[in-house]
Amino acid sequence: MRTLEGRVAVITGASSGIGEATAEQLAGQGAKVAVLARRAERLAELVARIEKNGGRALAIAVDVTDADAVRAAAEQVAAELGEADLLFNNAGVMLPAPVEEQRTEQWQRQIDLNITGLMNVIAAFTPQLVASAGARGVADLINTSSIAARNIFPNFAVYSGTKAYVTHLSRHLRVELGPKNVRVAAIEPGIVGTELQDHVTDQGAIDWLAGSKESIDWLTPQDVAETVGFLASLPARANLQQVTIMPTAQAS
Ligand code: NDP
Image 1 (cartoon, rainbow, N blue to C red):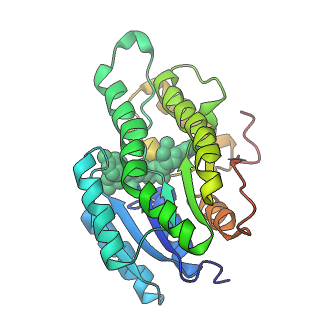
Image 2 (image 1 turned 135 degrees about the horizontal axis):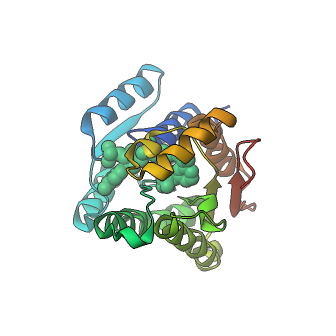
């Protein structure tokens, strides 16, 4: 169903996993999509697939931790697709490890991307969301959080802290931007099979993930993508502010 016809969506972290699937989903629902990530080749392949299926897509290779580059990307989106009215703020990295191992470089990478990168994207695109909502009556800011925002996972303290930030930030932004017709939501998935797990270096976490994959049918990126498409297709008066989506067999 082309429920997003005429809309302009921006998806960060679109070169793999949840972001990639969501770009295809939103394009399939009729939105023009701008896809952002660092790997230009992966983005080019995604754009080619979307356009082959009759969609309109724009690839912008950008590191979202670079505020100036993200601002330039926002200008490019407005110039080439029109002002964004749907932002799926999704790029993130998960690097668990016992805190006593002092992997400060990994702490910083998670904070830089999951918090600072997320904020760079909000800073660059919020003016477009507010303007679009003023003109058309609705816009969406959907942030990817995690069940790690609320649940306790040993050795995931820094990642979980960044996602608690995303969830709490989203609740605050909703009351700030809702009166301007910008809906704000946080999506909190349980385990989704993506490249996220491939970046993990801690052996304990690698073993835990491998055991979980054996016993649980993990979510697919498409499961989350459909949820994003559903949120954005609700009537303008309805803001589904928080969604927790779990593999059926995952306890917590
Ligand atoms: P992936 O690793 O597949 O996707 C991460 C995306 O972020 C990639 O497209 C990557 O592209 C992009 N990215 C990484 N660093 C940067 C950067 N500096 N600038 C721009 N883009 C960047 O993992 P997922 O799809 O699983 O992750 C998406 C989101 O979902 C994350 O926020 C994650 O925390 C969250 N999440 C994932 C869960 C899971 O189990 N998979 C569960 C709960 C939440 P590139 O390398 O090309 O830049």
